[in-house]
Length: 167
Ligand code: TYD
Image (cartoon, rainbow, N blue to C red; front, side, top):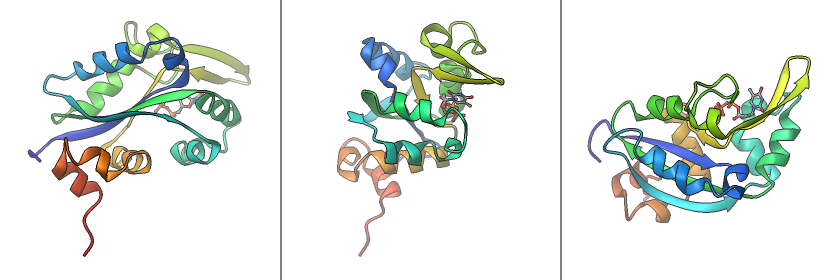
């Protein structure tokens, strides 16, 4: 693996898959940073256990049940994007802030996301896409959702790094 390559997990959430936005969003994110490429992708379905693991930092929030219902409501496209140093924050910038109405104009979430005000300053959003916040978070998320066999043909050194061979 060339030094300084970064990897991130992209999830195209059920609202976007239902609206047939998954290819549009995946194609856009592949071109956000020059020199990026997908090394794995597949369609999957979240269940409540998987959702709780992925969003473990939010399970105590009042809106968590909304997230679970939403994320388990349909298919999700999961993809592993590999790119140069700096790709992870650049992808986060292109998808935009969590709240689509606060996200910068032209970002994916601002363009396609929806928001429901829950009162008491809380909101729930169907915001189209997830992208890992850091390299460490990406490694954990990718390990949870993919198998080594799904990555090792296209990115053998990365697969070995995530799932070291045990003797
Ligand atoms: P979070 O990990 O905080 O944000 P991000 O997806 O930008 O990394 O939140 C995960 C998802 O939970 C977020 O994409 C949408 C939902 N969410 C809400 O609906 N309301 C909220 O107040 C927050 C913080 C998140």
